[in-house]
Length: 168
Image (cartoon, rainbow, N blue to C red; front, side, top):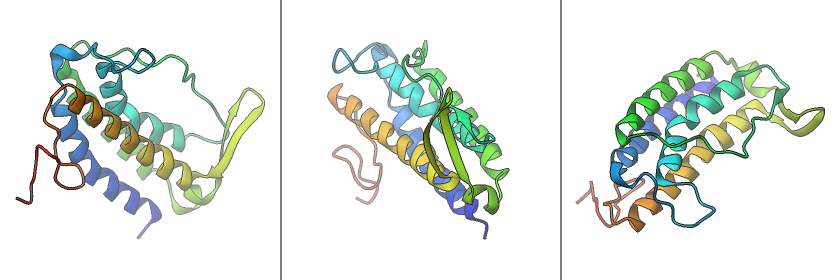
């Protein structure tokens, strides 16, 4: 089994969970934010939808890679109905980018730079694990907290939630 196969299996399993969370985003509350410095619900939901594809493509790019500008978040969607198509497109892009990587590419040192300054150098597989996957889960967790604060039923993620018990 190629190293990337385990990552792709996890991506597939987590996509269903992410889809369940995004399905709960209320379209009439996209501008809501829990604090002045926080992203709006729409901005965060869109970020959750697009992370896998955008970061997988970045990870698959030849090293060194120039760091994206993280200072301004993407604008939120105009409606919640945009979120699932964004996710599906993102997952398709992630699959394509990740399937192009062989074991040698996954083991090589991958570098991100800002101008001439190196920000970090890690095995490409470590970047994929931490940023395509763990970063995605982190923001999905934030999104579930937003839903709870808005009184929206939170779906089961890794087990029962207070609102959804698939084992019950």
